[in-house]
Amino acid sequence: MGTSQANSNVVALTEDHVSRVTGLTKGQLRAWDRKGFFQPKFAYDDRKAAYSRFYSFKDVVGLKTIETLRSKYKIGFKKLKDVAEELKAKGFDHWADTTLYVVKKEVHFRNPQTGDIESLRDGQLAMLAVIDVINDVQEKVAELSSRPQEKVGAVERHKFVARNSWVISGTRIPTSTIRRYYEAGFSVEQILTEYPSLTAADVQAALDHENCFDKSA
Image (cartoon, rainbow, N blue to C red; front, side, top):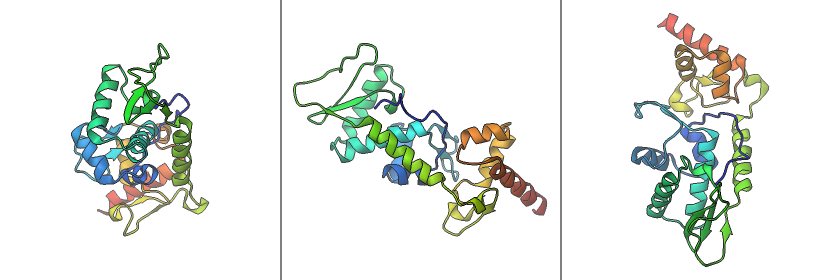
């Protein structure tokens, strides 16, 4: 599925967010990561740590593509793995790098250099609705990032959100994650590039909270 029209902003979404947008379970996301079938763009080496996986917008489009192939076109996991290997062999690094087609449960793709549909067999062509998937992901991501004004520039903690960790209000982004970015040398502007749904006030509130937490420890 091509993403030439996809949002170019870098978005870092948690497993919870990706599950809500794509319909895939967190268990599926983690299993695919472990197997090397689909790994998130942003991840810590220690995958057992809380919030060790974050997905980009492109990742989510690719995952939604896979979910569509599974649920709508009944493509099994073994065949999806074969498709992934074929795409990789053809020079595509990501599921969202080309347009996919389905013919009688066989997945094919359009070669961007020749315009030809590779390995196309006889049968009726069923083209995946590329723009519909991208728009669907964009709309759902926008819904996730929509917050009341009073939550901007604040932090909070709830029993059933992020395992009771302190997060930026109205989000599931832990304040500790913002701190790790900052300690890694990211400026506030660079952190906002990674989390475009946040504001400078959100980042500062997270850093202020983490500093206060250190002093009280």
